[in-house]
Length: 557
Image 1 (cartoon, rainbow, N blue to C red):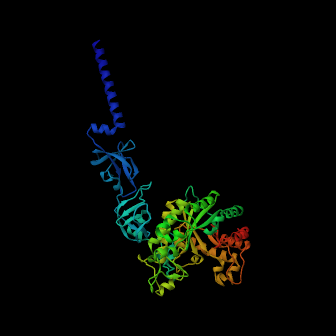
Image 2: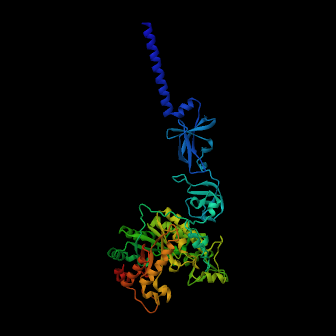
Image 3: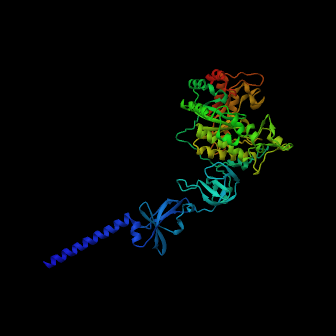
């Protein structure tokens, strides 16, 4: 009898021991912090840090297995070290799982999770005064070394969005880890040599020091870019008759509109950015912000894609407020009058800020799907006036014209894409040629960066006997198909070309012999573009946006 009692006691003791061990294990599993505090193994909050995007950790229970986490991942780490093959590691906990890692990859300050200290500039880039703002503090050129002192945020893959440097913030996507990589020119198929061979014939800059690296082109879920836009141009003076244009568009297959935001000396609405940068423009604006917004909303409510047009580097109103930013006469020290207008210099960064801030405001507050930069160039005849010493363009960074324009577009696309809208640029028809123009436009350098490139090959702008045509404007199909084939070749010279959506002449030719442009000529222009390989759509250029003319030619599109 005594022996049975003794056995029952042993069994009860074993069961209690099993329960205690199980409870301890469960307590450790679900409350490791309290367990380790009880066992004098302090636990701290921290983050994974590295100079790489990811950190590799060993699994605690099987050190032959590893798992990667992006840097910046929140962790809990233990004070007591664990030895593996005579090497001490720190135990960390992530999502209730336990890993081992060196202390070199742990920090308790989030601002220290990025370990890299230097980077090199691959694509010449703007320096921002503050993160999340468009104010410019300077400019880094290709090949420069930058010292990293912080960052704004990490992307989902652990990469940095913007690095903080001693001069301000820069986008990391324009930087490389190694100097020799940063200094290389993008040349996977030998096309760089094509650009390099073109030199600088007209003072706009050389094609060999522009950037041809692939650019990620966005596709916003709630704002789809039209790959074949059939577009009417509207100046702001006709917007009070918007219903007539909507009815015309609906009945003739038009799916988009270009509407002026800022035409030289004719600002469309009282923009907050205008009020800050150009009070002259603000005071002259045709519409209140609310009235203008309602007009654009009506276009969008009727199913149209709406593009806001900004005349960028031709702006007499801005120069009235900031004469110091103008292309300046060397003889008088005052703004240089070019063909009746004053031109802000495309080298001056405050001019960049004004136009891009206006663009972002117009996207966010007014609702545009896309921003179109017109006059994204230096004045025509730039080479002549500069060569003869007539002007000072305030080129403080020692850039070529083409470099300044391409860098402006990097700055603009970063800002406008961040607002979930697209960027298009107007270029002269001449830009389809194999050289950098005198005013700084070089088709491949522009098309590679932006979402849409809109050339202006108006037939009556071509000279007699050009492309073998005695009077080119009288043969719109032959002219446009020949020109488009040439432009299509420029599109093949870059890795990420823009959609080519081309302006067409929607007014009667101004050259003799006089040629009236009706439906037949419009149809010939569009067919010529398509047959020449440019199938991204068209935009009608009629400066007055004459409703009667549009109605007359509408069967042509």
